[in-house]
Length: 636
Image (cartoon, rainbow, N blue to C red; front, side, top):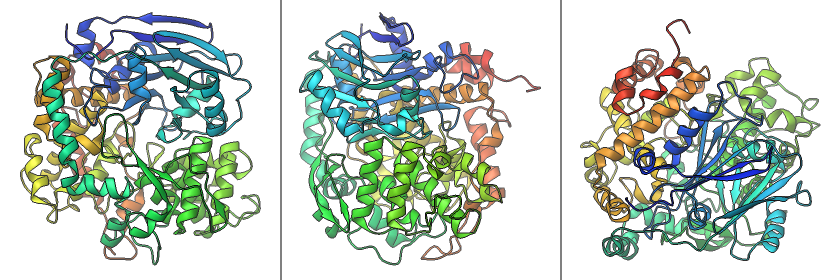
């Protein structure tokens, strides 16, 4: 028996109130490891096709991996999965912090919730035991208010995953907020919690993670902790948090601004990544056993007419850009307040900001008017309106009820060519990295089974002609040997996407953090493989990791095909094929014919046919022959 897992999965049926423990065998863990593969296994096995995302049959899965909680940086994440309310395909969102580690210490590798309670509840997991508790008294409260109450009712050291009013009101991009500052941001999985009347999951545990070779693991961890700060990327994160790259992309002309119309702002004092931004930061905070401390805590201050509580953390890159320049706003206190409201109400700041910026463009183009917006002047740059609209969305009130469904569905309601201005793919708003400046990432957005996300692959800019030589050297094990232009979609760039996507997908299976373990971060790939061997005792390799990533992508792909997705969903919005309007990258755009050719080549590399359907041979090679029955027929 190898080490690293507890061998137990906690099952809860909220409809019946039944709680039981499932014990998969060793082969299951050896085959699926955890994270995205574990979640996809249960969704494919147990979720009926075409399940209502808000119905009791939708599964809500919280999964760790066989590595989670080991004393080494970068292995503190957990995955939440369900059929997504936003895309209506497979949904996965990972969060860092401590919650997943605590679930493992409590004795479980995963929690699977089904059914729907007849009144608000929360689940309390304590050292191998679980109970369903009444949550009527905290339903309707913000995450901060509910967090304080649950902590008093359970344990001072408890870790809590919870939703606020946006999740309760089924906002399609509602998040799940862990310990107030570590959200599972994307895919609307907080709305699945809300549909089940599940306010929170509180966990505490005192168990130990069994390690095969503690001495080797300690050496790897010590090396990271002593020397990570010598690398440029970890140092930037340590100094400025994960939003530290904002100033850099502004200078490069690829800062997403005004609904992707342009790539620069005229002026932004105290933007993230500058010394002026530091005055808003109280302290840095890390995740379990990680010294990078890239999570930041905002000071509780009053400035520019807003009051910051200082308990919900500071935005990451995507949140800062989505709520800021993409809405035409460069007032840092307002952006911090908007992010605070997102975590308070449990809203994904990326989809929220992108949906609001879409509405702002529609307002300025005359597609909607004050009659449609509750009298609000929804112009770009209107700071007060941004904060007001966030509350309306969370409560599903007025115009907020329409915007709570995301830009794709809102465009259907607005009509008058509004769909042109919804910057989405698979009904999910794009992450805040412009594909016109990062072409492989753009293709990654399009073919990603969970829709456009910043973490689908390592970004093109890390391997272009201005990237440090160290980045090229460290990416050699995954087949990246030369610098390539970030704006290109050449055959070589598609190969880069394919290789990097398999590796990053594997990190979603092992619940590994891309900010610690990706090729350009401090921990080298060979050290990661050594750490896995030391934790588990398995004789594994980078090859097996890459195959795990490929297995996850194919399982996700087949789930979506079963739900009716086709290759025609692997697209980018029209704006990506239109030029950036101003700044250093003025005129830059993607070529649609080149994009379609690159997509076809990607399908070939994946072993899929020209409709993006995996072949029997590919599924069998990945030990996934059992999912062949879910593939569409030739006539479908």
